[in-house]
Length: 165
Image 1 (cartoon, rainbow, N blue to C red):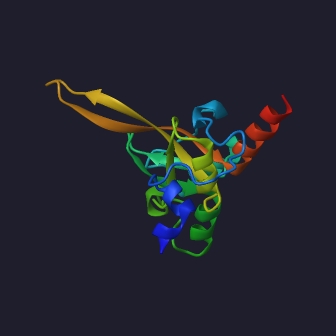
Image 2 (cartoon, rainbow, N blue to C red; image 1 turned 90 degrees about the vertical axis):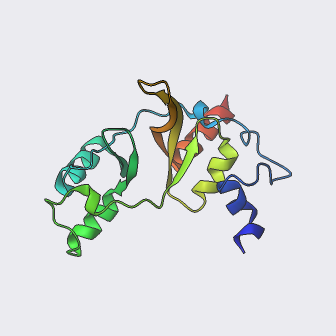
């Protein structure tokens, strides 16, 4: 069962430390990666435009975010092309037709060890920052904002550069 899988437990926030001999970078926070702000797409962006934007910016994926900041899902270049070529979507369709919400989120305060466990199964993770927002009557609610998208290459680059220093 997945509850007997330590990596699944770490990825889903049920277990903190599993490795006895952790690498030097294991407990460093995700915020140390110095990620650049991601490209985000609004729901009405067409599949064609999404492909163009991703290719132009050199990204493989982008979060689809509502005007309110709510993360609706992810669009990847390969998923977009596959959907269009298979006839499941048209180039003119909005990206909401092809987004998927099976992606992992990680916070800025989470460890690189947790990120490492996520990236063993996923090709990327969405870095989110939770923010408290207040409305006119003084009540508040938590809102997640996309801070970045992190890949195994980002982690590997950080580890190798920092290790050389």
